[in-house]
Length: 110
Length: 339
Image (cartoon, rainbow over all chains, first blue to last red; front, side, top):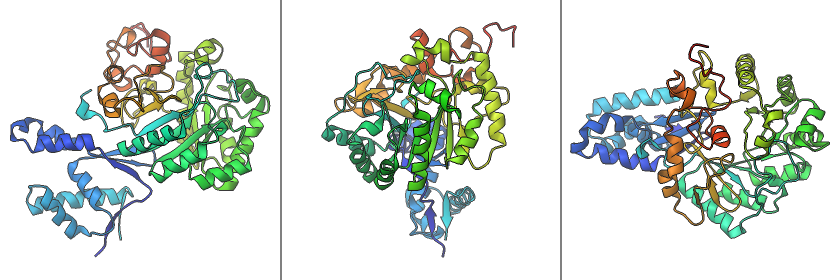
């Protein structure tokens, strides 16, 4: 199977402050009205070709996992440990994200 | 702006290691500021802190960085900590040995100031005879050493008529990116703005022309971001933040470790060696004011305000003492009846 690997020429970092905030909101049932906003918040910043991209929590976790050691199946397996979503939905979202990142040249599958 | 909306740290730190310089440029923001240099141990501490906070880019300016003996050691340390390091130089000291050391040290790219394709215009602006030839030689030395170069050109009254000649100049000397900088009225830039700065309608003309020229260019990146460009009809910038990026994506560190929102805003908001960096980034009242501006004057009710956020905060602050004042370069009329 083909492994997923981040473009090594891309600068990126985890937005640790925001990531902590998003995890706090999503993990607190009393703050459900903040979920949508938190879900869209960028927790990983990618800088490529002078353009800044922000990845939400799911995109950020996928990005972190694309270190060249995993193909899509085990990657989704890792995500299932992190998100309480059914496997079909998660696989669909992950595939769509990865395909878009490949199209932009930010992730390679080889 | 809520704290949770902020990035966890600036992406870029512009660092004036010293204001010591061998030039006396007409527009310099720092010529009249105190020159000093932190001890090497403190500089390493600052580098380590920036790396720890996740800062991605350090750009050395000042001052002329190539005057500093420790520049290469500092840079090597920063590169070893995963930071991407660039530098702006006037090019006077940029000869083949310097370019070789730059290559060995691991600088990502070097920005050389060239303000006109005409030597005499550049030399006059930089107030240094022969500086154009030395800068061009510096670019050639970088190319031979395999170092990426960029050119920084400050748009002003002296080069408005022929800035397009910079494109061929860059191509002839292996330059990857041409930065066309807007004029900042700080320091000597404010003293000499009557002679050097463009009028608002000239800025409108310049940006309209520059966008048109950029559209048809290949093989060279032309960069000239300015928040007031949001006032151009149909202009839809793909920018990470609206308005000034200072205090949102970047900060400036001065020679004593003092932090300012940018090099052109001489308001110290803390010291990187003495104060808690996160506290400065998230809680500085000055940064909060810059991030949450209130439209005043002609900005009130202006339809482009939500995109430009009043334009460059440094220019507004330099001329009025308020970040909320309209950018003095803005060409939109005060009179709502007039276009």
